[in-house]
Image (cartoon, rainbow, N blue to C red; front, side, top):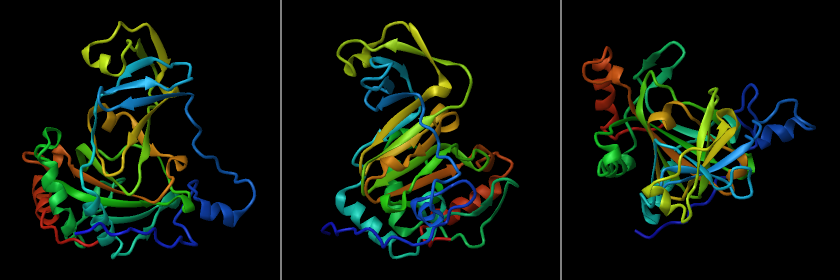
Length: 302
């Protein structure tokens, strides 16, 4: 089918912000200089290179040319075609979007979860949407996603007119498993990753011929930078699939800054179950039920 044009939805005049989180809509309504503060930018910015797996100091920065390994990030470009992208977003837009924090809108396909109390309900969960069946099947063709069976899909809608963003955070590890998978649609953006842990990162001077030279080897570490002062920018091309595992999943917080939303962006994030809900786990029966519902692909947003 020919790729259909995907128009941005009408900008809403109300928002779903709570507490300290804000968007352009509520900031304009409140007027004046807001008493709340946006997340300050980190002191040192590094750029992630998917072809090497290293983060390298940004140009004209104090650490330009210095690098450190950044494992746990896999980026698959052109995971869907332009026609598939247009069709997916068109089908998403047929269902209602709910207002969410920081100028976002969302659609959830998954169980209702209280992470604080570690409880969930499956009553309204009917599975992932039918249009995700092929996406999930295709994921299994990649070694990093072997055996990946998602039980939740969360669609987020970002728009520059609303000042959409998402604060640095770690995804839950009680219910959600090792791999966090996100499909980036409609426009490119940047995933910003930061870590609040004490200590320092050891840096290597990137050899000449970067980034290709990093594949073969690097020089011994000879410089360091405080973890808390570093932000790693992971460029996300349009129609790319991002997989976070290991330290990138569990130790580095991820965020989308407002300044990196320049056009409408839709992300579809897929989450698998933790080991506690898998075979041999304490919640294996519940996990089996969730998988059966999820992979029926009969869902509507809950």
